[in-house]
Length: 248
Ligand code: PEP
Image 1 (spheres, rainbow, N blue to C red):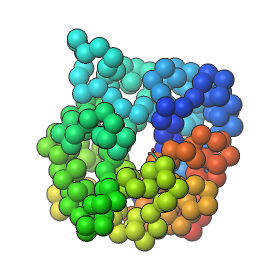
Image 2 (image 1 turned 135 degrees about the vertical axis):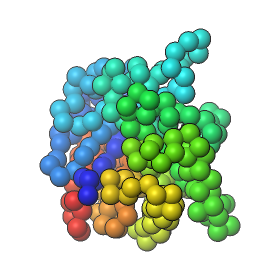
Image 3 (image 1 turned 180 degrees about the vertical axis):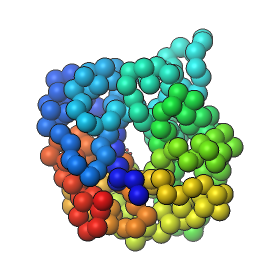
């Protein structure tokens, strides 16, 4: 079993001064892998301040180089010291027009540069209420499969992030998360992806109060943390919660 993984997603937040305070207060914990995905301009600063935590980015170009103004390639991220990159976050899908196929191409670009893509999937509230959760997630995963296949999935991390839980203060219950994580594991197993090393993170309003119950679920291998990753004590408390209730 790999260690549980907790990844902070800073989104569009930070400043040189604030980052120094936040990263200075985080530290690391034995028994859990910790990472932070920071805005592009702060990668170098974060790389210089991190001591044991892994570095990641929040998106990546599907292209390697050329006339793509504003884009940042996976190779550039790797050169800056990144290990992880988030692809297909629901904010990128909803606000920046990223569709399922593009998410697949971005995951492939990440793997090409030996980065670990954190592939985000998740349903809207309307889709949940219509009983379409696994249909939607199967479609999202299927598009990524077209680009990276079994070998790629065996090197990726998956994040289940129900859209209705992101930034709303309304996390999925531990039971709701477990049900979907088990469904994702089943989806992978049906395609013969080796499951032993795969980590499926839960994301959506995780905080120090609800993290332990979520991480205690057998198919929840860690978390993708937005708001709670912006305060050092809260982020550390979430990371520590992987080690209670049978966490790693
Ligand atoms: C996220 O943006 O990936 C996220 C999970 O946000 P929050 O924890 O704030 O809901």
